[in-house]
Length: 456
Ligand code: SF4
Ligand code: SF4
Image (cartoon, rainbow, N blue to C red; front, side, top):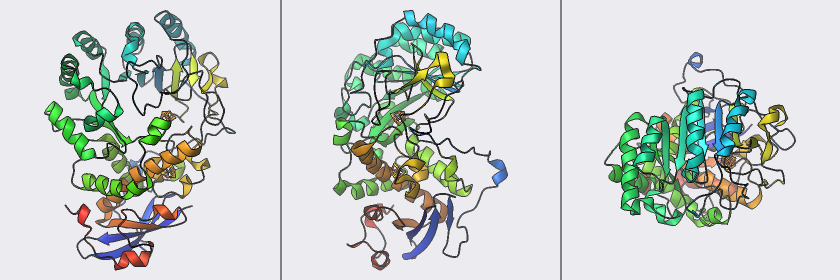
């Protein structure tokens, strides 16, 4: 059980209040133990199951998929700087001949129609000769399933757009907006490709089937700049921006684009300011995580119900390739090995009962996560990372989640957290770098408000 004392400023009276937050039962109270928020009627919340606790020694199995992720292969026509797949060992490429065997196998392991089917690359449209017959056969077999694909957008054209529309795809184009040049090539710089992307936007966005997916990194820190970029590009103030979180450090590229220690506070101030001024309200990682965190407190949602952020620790979320290999997730291959030495090939659909996720570690088995105040927002970063890359990803994730935590508590109470006390890393307690050095609760109390950088 981890309890925290939050020092929060009342911006009207400039006084400092102390709140108690418990990340295990999601209670937010005053020092007398009285709840500070309007609680929701628990009867309107579905009972949340206890999340599975997967680890090398207690591996998760897989069942008939509700979410089916199909990895077509890891080839890509771009080589982006922080791509999670950049250094992943490649399988033999799949090809159109694999489709028939894959389709024939389905009835043996997909026992009821999946709710969603995702088509993954590399760049999935590099595999269009395989993807077309596969998606058409799957659409025939599962007419109600939601189809989605994430693409870099460079291979879109009028014919492909029509096909994606006809098959009912939701399409996300990965693009970092003003920071795209840091990531890699810019498909919007090529006029025919730009037109194709915007044509697809016009077709699908009105039905909520299109988003631009952007990621933050140390050279692309401003969500308000990202949101402004896509609003201007589309002329649509309601443009949907998917993802929008800070990159994980999967490799040296991601590590180089991670925040450095002197940058944590300025990033958090920028992020909080963007949230508070409504300049990142179209960005999924802000909107969704903020509402989820607020509701976790309103419903006293227990931490025991929290799975990993990507959901690949659910038994009914399965990533497979067309040879039937079951994978840790869509970002790895059957030939790759996790940092803990286990193969990312965790079984085969021909023997689903033998599948065992040994590559990954649930947040509850990590040292820091159960003692972390932003646990309900972060959900433990990438479940298979370990060592220095995991630590770097954890640092990014903490600074990414903290402004959402702060904004959520302000939304619920009108008070702005500036400091957190508890049994966790001392260097993480000062939220915005506004306190005197050394950081102490007394120094916070002595520090006058307002905080200039967050005034609206
Ligand atoms: S910020 Fe780090 S310690 Fe906190 S929940 Fe995320 S991964 Fe765990
Ligand atoms: S395990 Fe989850 S977070 Fe990690 S690379 Fe795979 S999908 Fe992403």
